[in-house]
Amino acid sequence: MECLFGFEGNGFVVVVADTSANQSIVVQKTTEDKITCLDSHKLLGCIGESGDRVQFSNFIQKNLNLYQFRNGIPLTTLAAASFTRCELATALRKAPYQVNIMMAGFDKRTGPSLYYLDYIATLQKLEKGALGFGAYFILSIMDKYYKKNMNLEQALQLVDKCIWEVGTRMVASPAGYIIKIVDKDGARLLERRGRPAEEHGDPME
Amino acid sequence: MSITSYNGSALIAMVGKDCFAIASDRRLGVNFQTIACDFQRIFKIHDTLYIGLSGLATDVQTMHQRLQFRHKLYQLREERNMRPETFASLVSAILYEKRFGPYFCEPIIAGLNEDGTPFICTTDLIGAKQLSKDFVVSGTASESLYGACESMYKPDLGPDELFEVISQALLSSVDRDCISGWGGIVHVVTPGQVVTKTLKGRMD
Image (cartoon, rainbow over all chains, first blue to last red; front, side, top):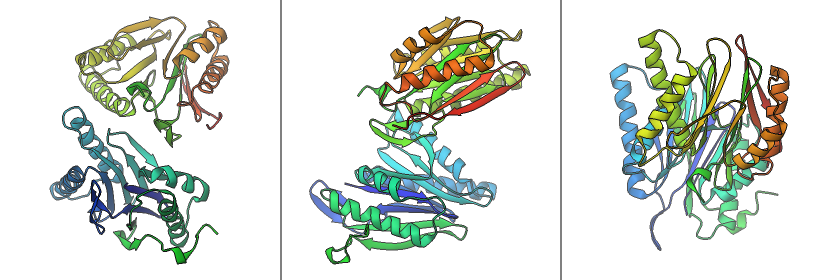
């Protein structure tokens, strides 16, 4: 029951993923990091089949690094997303990667951007998006509460609302989440968070 | 759900007097969940040639990349743009290459010949070309689209009237299909210019 979501704010993109690694009914790990920093200004949130998730995100990270070593400059977010889409599309009719991806990046010229890339290689630039079972709840919360050009504080409040909704309404919801941000200063970890406890109350009020 | 109705789509191309119009809906969905309302289905190949691709979104994007690549190579080698009939044959050949593992998309091709006469055609997912004198439709809403176009279409419409007719046909048809719609985009192409307009429809 994974979930991955992200949205654009004022000069930044926030990407949130759950931190559970499960195998059938067993919770193997609750501190899994599913958002890879591809380079200084890009994030790749990746959920799905565990082997594919780790291997594919590392594969993309190494290839983007290779491009930067060879050419001296990093790829733009759109170019990186296109490259990733092509890898998924080529593998689709041979040995598909069962991973769903949200790619976020900050380019000097075009600013922040967020890309949705599902396992059958459908690429779409979005302002807000969600993947996994959590998406069924998160998309509706974001439809109601998301505004353009939110500052970081408002963005984190929206993240709170989304996490709370998934925790309340989804069966077997994840125990923890990891929140990463990418802005002009780079891609970095913002915080790791557990599921809000009962006493924290309803952030909707 | 069938694979061609996984993402949802609706496309029309219509012939007018020395012009053509090509229109599509803008929804990108995954079964019944809507992901985006600005998905691009119509692509410009050159100034007077457009292709609209309906069906599975990943194959729409792959086909577009392959066709753009082939046309750019053609431009480099021949130092001119492809004629619409030639392009339609290229699309048909590329689709038939994958006869036993096809791309799940059904293109409509619309262009202006060198003498300014409009050309439209459609193919199925394995490249069976079908030329038409009046309109072609494609997508999950195709049955509705056929009915709407048949009743609203008149030959030899000017660009403005053609825009009205194609917009009304598109909007009324996607309202009857739950997995297409969420707005529309129309390109009306005459020999001198292209006018692109977005349509505001029911967002549901």
